[in-house]
Length: 285
Image (tube, rainbow, N blue to C red; front, side):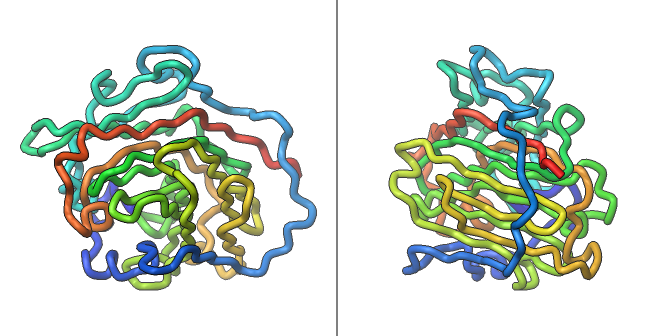
């Protein structure tokens, strides 16, 4: 997601919009390193999950909120103000989580939305991370399900890493992205490790997005089909900071360097990002 909790996360717009995250004429781009997957299994049942089966606000035992618009749009020049447990922007209903981006002014910004975080309530080192979701449509929408480090052991972004399980930008319909970011491999220096695929009806139907994270690799899947693979090259934290605990983030951004690269259609709002469940399966060693 490349969203910031630190001023150093600010990116140059041109460097962000030139990378392969936008599909252009391509239908599929897979970033795959050669990795040995033998020997790793995961629990058959989730060890941490939210099925979003109780109407109202999200479960406070699992979720907190990032609030506001820290550092001018969370480092990406996004246009939304993230609210704090406001039922207009976030709600659980009929077995689904809804995050609504609304065209309304707050604190000098033209949109409101929500960003859920599991930090301190769901922090993980390795495992299988799965989300079933339906992305919004409309130019300017930028939904994401992703993970950030809980303790930032190696320093500010990108040093301590980031794992993007699902990203979608509204101007590029049905093209979904899986990525990782590290000090050695990230968008702002053109060394990103990312992959995308155009899938059928990502905006109209639910699809399952998954990352398997082990000490040796991170692999990404869409509906069970492998799209992304990133190997631990064992050269240190600059390439592999993924030996520390990470937590979930779920949000719907508006605009920004990537989401707004082709403008924002105000008529597309309100927009809703819908999540059926998130599940974590422990790594069996």
